[in-house]
Structures are given as C-alpha cells and as structure tokens.
Image 1 (tube, helix red, strand yellow):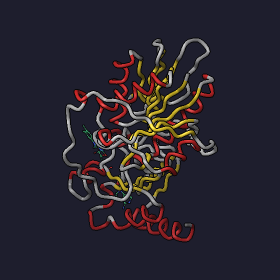
Image 2 (cartoon, helix red, strand yellow; image 1 turned 60 degrees about the horizontal axis):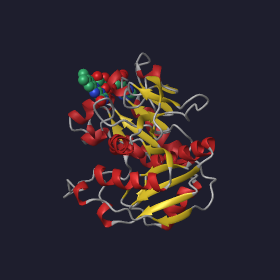
Image 3 (cartoon, helix red, strand yellow; image 1 turned 135 degrees about the horizontal axis):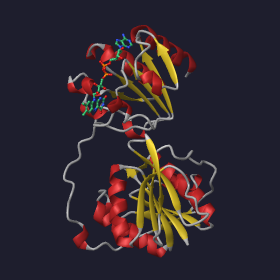
Amino acid sequence: MSVLIVVESVDGEIKKSSIEAVSYGALLAAKLQVTPVAIAIGVQDQAALQALGKAGASKVLAVASELLKQPQVLPYASAIALAATQEKASVVVLPKSTFSDTLASRLASKLKAGAVTGVTELPDTSAGFKVKKSIYTGKAFTHVEVKSAIKILTVAKNAVQPKEDGGAPAIEAFNPSIPESDFKTKITKTEKASGDLLLTEADIVVSGGRGLKGPEHWGIVLDLAKELGAATGCSKPVSDMDWRPHHEHVGQTGVKVSPNLYIAIGISGAIQHLAGVNSSKCIVVINKDPEAPFFKAADYGIVGDAFEVVPKLIAAAKNYM
Ligand SMILES: Cc1cc2nc3c(=O)[nH]c(=O)nc-3n(C[C@H](O)[C@H](O)[C@H](O)COP(=O)(O)OP(=O)(O)OC[C@H]3O[C@@H](n4cnc5c(N)ncnc54)[C@H](O)[C@@H]3O)c2cc1C
C-alpha cells in the first residue's frame, strides 16, 4: 500500500509546492503506515529526483515520456491512475495549483475516488478519514469526510513545512501506456510572463499599490525585491493603469499568493486584495495612513511614507544579506 504524491515541474524544475506536497504525503504515509511514493513527470535531473527523497519520498517513479512533456489533464490522469494502481495507493496527494485541481477531479472520476482540494492539515483518521480544507480564499475552513476507498487530496500552499531530512529514494523508470484518445489538445505555443521568479511559487513577495503614485517610482519596489530575492506583485488599479504588467496583479481577480513573507507598500488592503494574500505566513504593511485596513491583516506594520521607509529597508537588506 502507498500514498502516491504527484510532482509538478516547470521545464524539468520541481515546483516548491510539490516539495510541500511530498513532505505532506510522507507525513501522511507515516501516519497510515504505508510507503510514500512520488511520481515525477518530465523531471530528468537526478539531483532533482533525489531532492524528492529528502522531502520524504521512499520511491520515485520517473516518467520520461516525450508525449507527456506538455502538462495535459487527460494523459496525466491516465498515467497517474496507472501508477496509483501499480503502487496500490490508498491516497493520491497533489500540490495545489489550477492544473492540479482539474487533474484531481479527472483522477477522482478514473479511480472512483473522493477528492478534496486545498487541504490544510493531515487528516484525522481516528474514525474514518476527515480532512480540513480552506474555503473563501482562506477566510474560513470546512471539515470533509472522505468515504471512498481511494482518496485524492490537493495540499494548500504553506500547509506543511518542507521536509529536508529524508533519505535517498529508490528511483524507478515508469513508462505508462497512454491511449491516443487522451491527447485531445496540443499546446502549440507558450508565452511566459517576464520576471525571474514565479509569483505563485515565490518565498517572498514585494507588492506595490497606488500609494507609489506612478510607474516611475517602482524602482524602490524592484530594488527591495532584488535585495530580498523576492518576486514583485501589485494591486489591481496599478495593473489596470499599466504601471505594472497584469500578471503581477494580486487578489481576488488576480494571482493568489502564499509566500512566507508578503510586503505590501502603499496598498490600502481592500478585501479583494486581501483575498489573494491572506494565506501568506507573514504580512508586513507599509502605509502612511495608520487607519489603512491592511494593518488589521498585518503581522508587522510600518506607519510611514513609502519613499522614506523603503530606501531604509533596501539599505538594511544590503547590509544584512
Ligand atoms: C469586483 C472587484 C474585484 C477586485 N479585485 C481586486 C484584486 O484582485 N486585487 C486588488 O488589488 N484590488 C481589487 N479590486 C480593487 C480594490 O477594491 C481596491 O480598489 C484596490 O485594491 C485598491 O488598490 P490600492 O490599495 O493600490 O489603492 P488605494 O486604495 O488608492 O490605496 C493606496 C494606499 O496607499 C497609501 N499611500 C499613499 N501614499 C503613500 C505613501 N507615500 N507611502 C505609503 N503609503 C501611501 C494610502 O494611504 C492608501 O492606503 C477589486 C474591486 C472590485 C470591485
């Protein structure tokens, strides 16, 4: 028996959320006294596959098929369902992402399994199998009992501390036979958003709002982000006015982020913005208005003019790093 953990990658590089999913899956496997097995599609690098062992996987199924190079729901669901059957998986764990949520529902249909997305804790297995999941963009939680023999869970970002003390996994090639009929679509071109760091995967996000007055003042946001190794985000009006690209827009109608540290500069903290950031581990707000609503959601607040405060933070980060 096993817990099968699905690993997502971009250009062969494993996403941070997948390391979290493997760490979660390893803890769950220990609880259920079964083997944690990871399935990594399109990851060739041996060091990256070994890292899945450090995160807790005892075994890694490495899928090298050219056909599966493009992430597509139907063929991925077929491959993972075959792996789940081979490994006698009682639970399939996936990282939280738009792709994984869709994949989870397709897998659920293939494996006749109950699926729960956005799980925040290990299940309570004292009587049945009950999981806690985040709802309303992290503002509330709900408890769900999964009654099927096979369970499918996607793990909310930051739900577990990534494990780094696991051992060397057994790495096995896995070559699933996927029916031709699964390939109903083909990605013909991918245009990547600019920026070095993926906003949804970044450990630190530095975000700016209308308080910065104009795009010509964005240098301090970019400099702080550079010093901290952070990705940059912004509020909706900022991207609406083309001060920043749309893919940086954070919030209910934009990107949802869950970094360890979210620094909001000159952002008021409207509910629609908070909806995209409130699962961040630590929120720092810099705003000159002490009544700005964002301070209520902040772990640390600095009441001050961004144009005075941020250069001091950049200087401090330069000295520290
Ligand atoms: C359906 C709907 C969906 C929406 N979706 C989103 C969304 O996904 N994301 C989003 O962000 N918004 C969204 N909005 C808009 C949202 O309601 C707010 O209008 C928006 O978040 C405000 O952006 P802001 O905080 O940058 O600007 P403002 O509200 O203008 O706030 C600027 C802040 O900067 C501070 N400030 C000014 N000067 C300085 C200075 N020198 N130093 C420090 N602080 C300073 C001010 O005190 C103020 O708090 C949505 C709205 C609707 C109706």
